[in-house]
Image 1: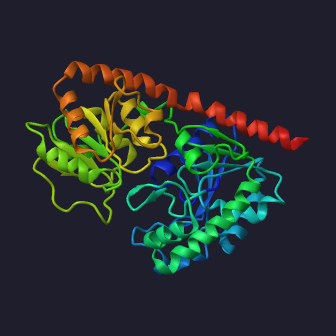
Image 2: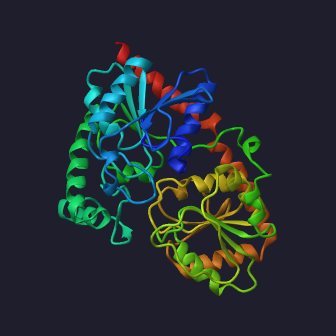
Image 3: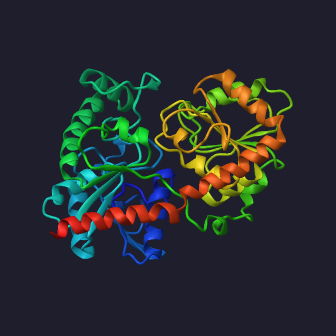
Length: 405
């Protein structure tokens, strides 16, 4: 695995990577992760059989290039020290497959032509076609790339001094990536479309994210964080507390609801996180994954009101696996997961009226909530490791067989 972050830095993408690695080890494979070293982390450790190699990067030494969240993202070009580090890991591990997950693949590409390993890239976002990885333009879903538009957008996202260079580098390295990859895995159909894979002639398959089969046994119902929750039956949002995740519109709608249960927000604060909250709203910050799963089980309705084109939405299948009915935006990869009227309700993104109508419908109809929760839990089994991992293994074996000729 080649990924810019690994445990203990855990977001949706990182959770997928470590879950995939652990599941592959359980199924008899040898798995190693090459990742970027962050401060005070060990150079090497073994986590449940997964060997984690943390590599020092050149770009990561320059603090002024990054924001203050402590994450050292991979640049959209080969980092010389990381490339040398990956080469050492390749010599040590001698993999049959290199499975990359983000821009750290660019530090591997100079080695790809001489490597005997097949190259698989999972696209968790829109980074192959979009320098900001968001596929958003002026707060709205982007209609497609264009040189001037993309340079302007990248400048607005990263700053004028860096934006143009990041766009041009990503475009150049993306062309090399397209020539080097044996198989792209898109986490949803919209991810394949917005990355330009559909009708491109490039090899790709849509393979969704997944949850571990033993997720229930991992949940921690004794975590002291759970004491902060109100009585069972609250509304729950989990994710970055940002405008793109729909937090602003959610708070606007909640303020207009009458006699609603408490609203709980769990997630990382961002630059546009609202400072003022309506009464009966709790903003709890980031929680560990196991505690989040317990919070889902104690809630009555799961809320995913995103206004950006979510590539997949791990929180969606997490909430569904806890038997929670969903109210989610009809955008991005979410409609691939939620069946409107069965496992949840899909609403128009950014539309306060449709979001309010959906919340009121479920609040006033306990029987419908219960039935949708059961349907959601059943649907979530299609996104378990036992259903998804064999598809990934089959892709690995197919590439290895092709390269053996």
